[in-house]
Length: 130
Image 1: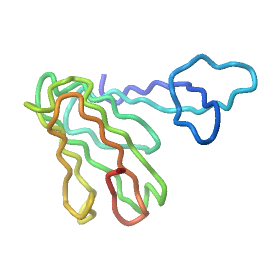
Image 2: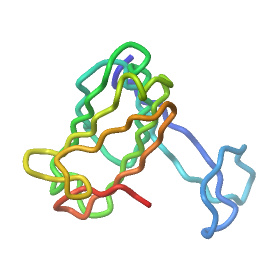
Image 3: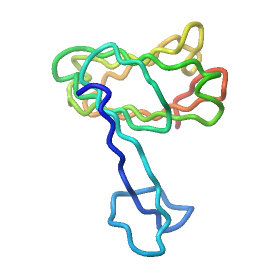
């Protein structure tokens, strides 16, 4: 259901590599991600450093409301995934808090099926990671 969180465990072979799904082996560096299911709209983010697994696009458009950037803090990030595989028809709109922006705009719209976007915070506003 919406807001259901699941802890994902990944292993990282070196600090230069990106985390990838793999079983943990003794001596590995462990990285934890929180995956939250989003099955209704609007969804208000309650914590950062997580993956939002948006399945509701199979049914309707979705709005994801971000927390205040000052609350999230400098370095906070969120990854939003169109897990419903229908964002081209039912867009995912990510909405900054109040007058805060995402890449200088009030909202960021995901409009491609299976699209994934990672956004990060500088403590004042949000930005789409390159």
